Length: 255
Image 1 (tube, rainbow, N blue to C red):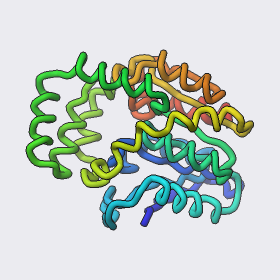
Image 2: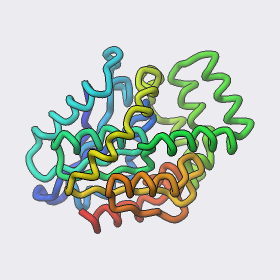
Image 3: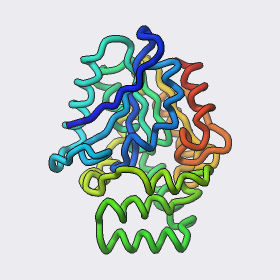
Image 4: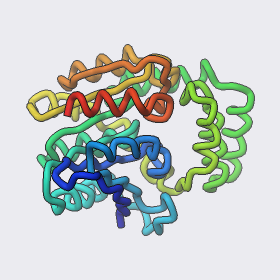
């Protein structure tokens, strides 16, 4: 099942914000820099099976998980907005398309084939020796520890904040969830044209220093889906960790 961790706002009338981590296979712990948004929203941090000590219940497809999360969202009273980081943005988009929320925020989400291809090219271009070693260890033994270690070595591909490595190393990841869901990312370009016809609030946030998914490709995706697009300075792929204050202020301004 999907696990929700609630952080209560000081005002019950504030809208609700559901925050979905990326990876796939990362937990909501990678998003907790956004606790500051509890000043404006009731926060619900999402953990899929296997992450953040949530039991893994077997291979469940994207559609099934998205429908389950959408149902949880519609059961909560008030205005409901969904935030998705990277792979989590696909869930946010699907929930919007199915009319189960009042708006979305996508952060560093590669919807188009061009964006995904550029990510593969940038990985090879900027991979350090340490990253390649960690990748090799992951290839030999695909467990949670090696998965976290591999992602923690992404370095500037992921972060401008040097504490990013520790964030991933200490995350309660799920290697199995990653392996069961990673191939889904190539199927979601069609979401952009569907979202372009939806007039609800749509925000797209990218980092100016993202070396994995460069802002040029992400801005192109955002235009295709008719999002409000912003590029946050001095931030990489984990924009909300590198610049939590700027991300929070932009979300509050637009919603």
